Image (tube, rainbow, N blue to C red; front, side, top):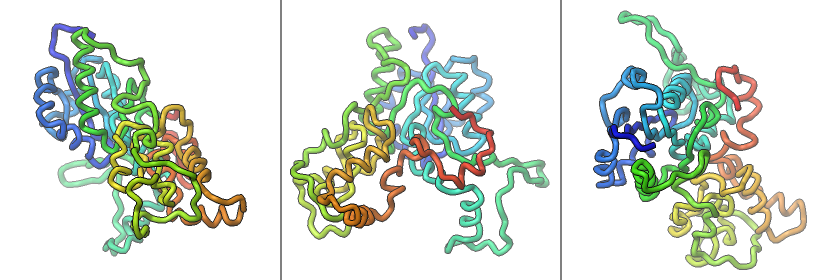
Length: 339
């Protein structure tokens, strides 16, 4: 990877909230080291650069690209292919690119039902003419285009090959800085990058292993929202207090920030190493703390989880074995590359 020219850096934002961009800015003075080590050639949120500028670059000329966001539109997929072609190292950066994250929960609904709700059924929508977005529109200035929506949101690696995965919603700034240091060291022959497909900027265990809370006999009789718990024991495992905490299935690396603040882990770092399906592993963990052998009582206790889909697949639905509901798959049109 050693080269005489200054290595090039790029970052792109697909279907996501933008928090990953802020996390990079939050590395503070480390940004100066990035600027010293790399020539930033494409980062739309931070500089004036056009897609045509990237298209003009030789293939494989960008050393490192951090790509955040899921594949929800035709434009997202086109940019994924472009950045893959131009980049030596393409990193799925953040939970949306790695797992689908919150936008991936839209895979539970069809495009039509989502459009119906947002443009005519929402309590906050005023649209008496039922105007809907169109992929093409004739305007006085010429034909305008909007990217077509895909029926099913995909992760970055479901569309193009990815070199590394860096989870988190967003990734912790200290982890970002450490990964950038590793890449810079590798460029100068002073370090070695992990094998392709590795998860970087995170741990190999679970959030529970980072959490200082004590785990005792696991015997609960109901699950509760954290705001409904009258008094949270600051030392005891949240799950053992009936608070649905996703730590048992979630990859370590965040330092158990949420449990340390008496908030349950939501799962933004994705599945721990070796977990095939995040939701299935989490269901097993939740079932293990229920103090009952009665199927009816167990069912009643599990009914205390108010939003099972959001609890078990909030960040991971698009990458799970389930991936999408039947309603979404019915509209699947084949425009996406399916692994």
